[in-house]
Length: 300
Image 1 (tube, rainbow, N blue to C red):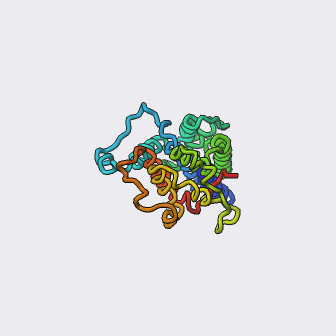
Image 2 (image 1 turned 90 degrees about the vertical axis):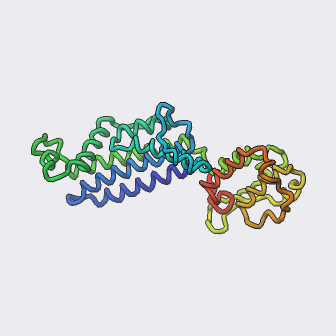
Image 3 (image 1 turned 90 degrees about the horizontal axis):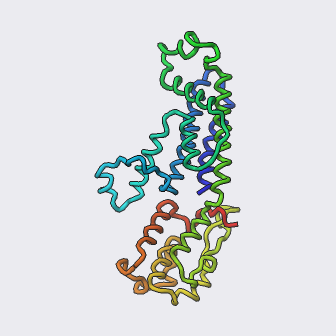
């Protein structure tokens, strides 16, 4: 969901901005390294979510490294296998190289970010020196005895680099909003419903209402058009009853009593579209309250 991509970035941007206000001679090295970590983790988390949503973006050039036990122990949990592959991919590009990370993000998401390549390379050089070579024996190399003065890491340079990292993250956020703003929870539930129910009796527009949340002022949540269901449920097929009961159960633990008896619901072996069962379970694994109280963006 676009809002989740943006929210993750916003949290990290705020942390970096808060640190920037506290920079002084005693903490600028540590705050710079931490700001870089927040920059890196913010972008990596976006890439992780993008790959989870669009696993086809994973390159076939790399062979996934999976233990046999990973497959056998999770044969009924394909999400775990996909997550393992994605985490390995993220780990391979999250190595303290800001330029390589940005290039990968631009390639995966098909966007163009405005940034100075030379400056981003310099940011990575100083981050890696501070993180890995900032010992007593190496500090004279880092802080200037064996280097030119313009290579000395200072409070002013830390402020400059942190400002650059923040600006790149803000541009990244803007690009995500522009490219993925149509990916909302409303779009998710509408497309999920449309893939499962093809009968005109159970059109999404007739069955689903978006209403104001009782507990979260200003938020929209999923509602059910019970009047419409009262009219059409008895005319639906057994498999449609099965999937409808599946979704209604997420809305309310007792609502199915209003529409179905046990003998209305067919056995799993008679359901021809097992793919739809997997789709529903996959979505509810990520958004267990999608039909029951979670804020629905994109409905207006």
